[in-house]
Image (cartoon, rainbow, N blue to C red):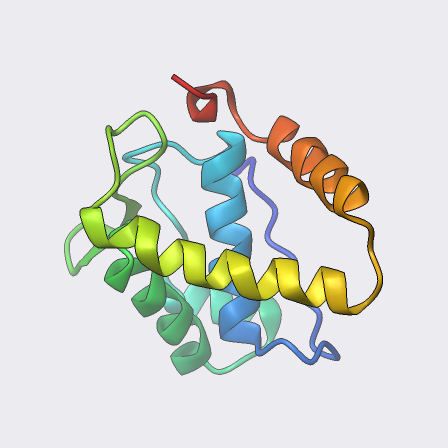
Length: 135
């Protein structure tokens, strides 16, 4: 993961473990991390950020539960899948749709117009790696 820079904001309302998880997901989506890419150990990353290694472990565990990361004692944390790995698990779309609905509702509640929300979504999607394009 030498080329991937993970940044967290200790002053954010978003918990650090969630920020770590989010940045790794974004790195996978942009193609900066591919299937088989190793991630730093929990202790190394915790030391780099000056945080408790259990915090990093919690973020990695979320990624493991979401089947994006494989963790074992010999190889450490390794990206399990990326957009080129085929279709997601069947339950993923339903769960993701629920989370997307909440984000879209938040944008609407704050007064963003429908076209502005769609424009933002398109711009964000354009930042992701080529393996993530529509088939």
